[in-house]
Length: 267
Image (tube, rainbow, N blue to C red; front, side, top):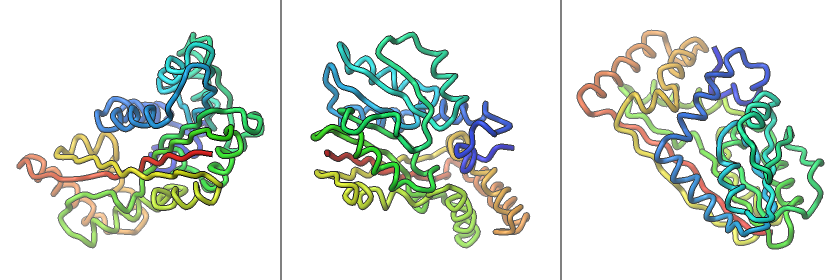
């Protein structure tokens, strides 16, 4: 079964692409993530005629929103490492000022200094060299161009579990499966090293009071089971962890939180 922490690194080779697309859909439809997306659009300060690159566009409608905002005369380029997701995105659009390309972090297809804005949303956590991607974002922007990024730092993911040691082990296992699970704390440094100015960081926290919500977006039970299979916790401890969360949920006592970092800057 495809694991969400690693599956987005190799979507085209996944045996369960529907699970990955479903995860993206769940996130898109969640009020917290919708509000962060809307804020990221505002931070881009899009004007008619702007050329915008969306990194990791997937099959979602973010690029369509950007395409509407840069009309008339603008252009949005949706890029993704996955040929499958680019194909899905192409099938879902008839927008004339929207195009798609497959790129893997090397944006040689985009000339230096041609974009007015570039945006990425939870992509760098899946990239082994996020600093290189940010350098490319800087290269393709015009002087004065804007970048907006949103990334988690998975050590800031919290679940109120039955045992702190077990809970910490499961969380650390989840975090370590990402190519760069701690990218949230590094984005400001990466942006400044690339040459961006006016770099601002806005922490945004999602609070969860329902186990179902945590399961749909963060696959908490699967994380525990996989941590046990990897020997990070015992099978019994994983089962007790899941059972405890279900019990707390039934009592209305479940608690979890996720913190991501919205970052903006200028060239």
